[in-house]
Image (tube, rainbow, N blue to C red; front, side, top):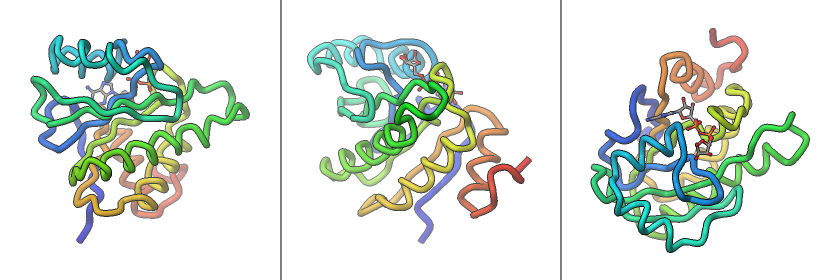
Length: 172
Ligand code: AR6
């Protein structure tokens, strides 16, 4: 039974137990997928986020989903890309791992990830995708379904290639 799925589109529309938000350490909203999630969830999400006291890079915190179809939001903070020698790969891996562990500790069974850090935070897409797929494969646990939600076709193709075990660099 294959649990990994690649979906192209807007993560705020997905019917899953939790969608993951690529947030910043304040957890008080921003642009990109973070902005889209807060807009779709409504003001209740920001109110709950204010009670959380932020979130360190590489860690994750959970809230309810408010007006989203998803029941919960797992907020994680990816690393800002600074060239790759400032611990970015470990921090990005930690985002995926922390989110998966948190989902399972709340007995969630379906989860959708955006491509964390690959927008405003500038993490190159190919190594980021390899980390995402590796960590999800390693920490699937009892999750029945994990979706990689990609905002565009090129990102979805890259995920499909990495999941299929093809080199990211030969996927275009
Ligand atoms: N659904 C799915 N993916 C999306 C969506 C969406 N609605 N919108 C954007 N993406 P980014 P980061 C993709 O910049 O790099 C925020 O201001 C996008 O194409 O959202 O982790 C936070 O507050 C890209 O591939 O997140 C932080 O300050 C991916 O989501 C900062 O940005 C991540 O892009 C975090 O930067």
